[in-house]
Image 1: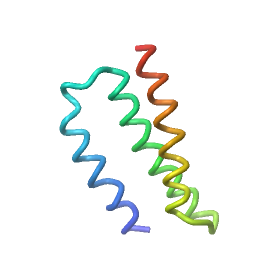
Image 2: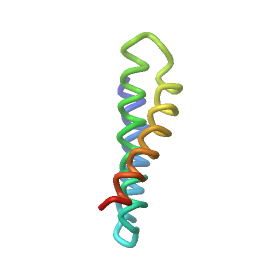
Image 3: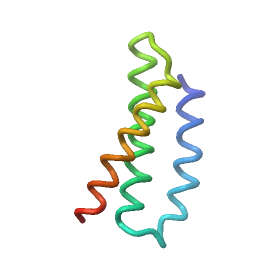
Image 4: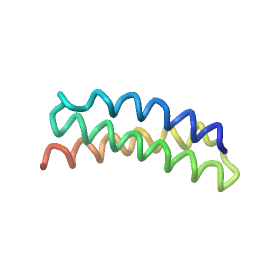
Length: 73
């Protein structure tokens, strides 16, 4: 579980450093994808499923929701 957390946290941190020149929609998409991937990986691992599959599904769903939220800001 710790490996998955590090694998998700390091790219999320790297992408968040470059967020200063992004539009609100782009920031929302990136943030939503990172949060969704982390949540999906955690849920996938806790339910006995695949953490990788959960991260992919959660990341995709989070990106869509984050984009919608960012556009409304």
